[in-house]
Image 1 (cartoon, rainbow, N blue to C red):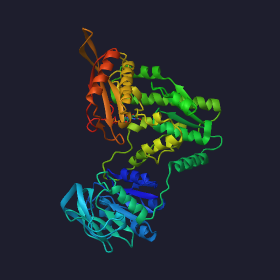
Image 2 (image 1 turned 30 degrees about the horizontal axis):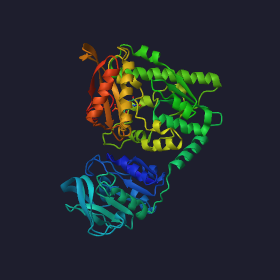
Image 3 (image 1 turned 120 degrees about the vertical axis):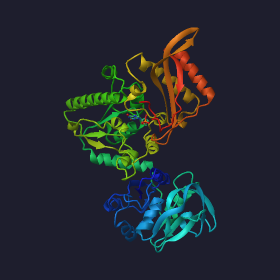
Image 4 (image 1 turned 30 degrees about the vertical axis):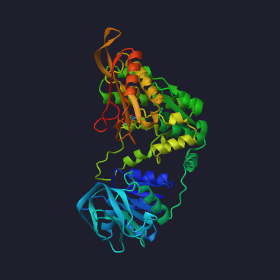
Length: 518
Ligand code: XMP
């Protein structure tokens, strides 16, 4: 195991992902966790991440007392990256000070001493790296040696070979450090002697074993399928483990995914069409938050009724609940102090059925909680979840209601929106760009504008098209379509969807906008 101690860098997840991509299992925990959290995981390598702080600030986060002594006496390799390097230097008796020249962006560094971390690189070899720091290591602790320096003369890489301490002032994990991946590879395999062998097949087998051990032979398990990739893969995995002791519910939100559940995945699913129930509660509601709350509450009612019915039929309360929680949600629920990073995103709470009634007393099964989205897709492939399904764009838990601005029940809005969305998404698929887009969808606006169609004056609705690229949905850029593509889509929408005479394109990034409009 390679353990990453998170000190708040925006790149910390990336380190974890990069290492996993080298087939080495890595986990990330808060850098300020007690020593026992680290030792209980028994890592062979610990990486101290970067972070936005200066080690001189009063509230700067640091690793637990006794960490370096523990690492040394257990032969654990430690690599400090940027802030992590400063921490290591400071805690081992060196000096960190504000650099004379701050270094941000692409820089060149030069190797001063041959070192395993740079593989076969020779003294005098140069490489471009991504720097982002104000502080720098001014005096190194005893035993440390400079391995590389920046153009400006700042320490860029250090080692204390005997004690197995290493440090990089730059970020090898970002693509702006073109040889960074090679450096991580050399560090892990050549310096630390780590074995590559972490495979998704093993993860699946291990998870199935864990589920089988936890779930008793007559325990029933329930799962709410959202129609998204995460809950589907989670349910499929649990089904592999316990078969039809799993009971799924899918609250139909207008997406055509039941076929996949039943025909392709053989999941035992009860489909509940609660459209009328939801719409009657949403009538006249225009406030986005209120809409979400109402949908969340209704969802719980539907879910509760499902669980009660199961209990009546089976003569036994279901004991477990499957949730498709992913690793980023877990990491984000315990951010390091002082990072300003928000606690577990509330946007996910509905999706993960966070507000279930307390008296259900269900124990949680979260088989994906150590995986990133792309790894879940990989696992899904092994579980034979159809590729077309795994590549589907994310869809918000509350459904289309948050894509109809204003009153969902007015002006045939949901139907109109579905038609526009279908044209938009189909055109994107036809153009072969679906997989390059994180998410694309249409939004129904509660606005009418004047148009002219077939020599007639019209007064019809405006719809907006939104398509973004993103790594994880936390930030996003708008997708730049070809002009011809847009011409074609707009023409198709206005010609085929009654009640729409104008199409707007949303070209706002996140931030300042969110991906969804509500
Ligand atoms: P925003 O709109 O906050 O969305 O930029 C970020 C990502 O989350 C999705 N989203 C949701 N997903 N339940 C979900 O499961 C929700 O309530 C919800 N709201 C937004 C959104 O589609 C995007 O992928």
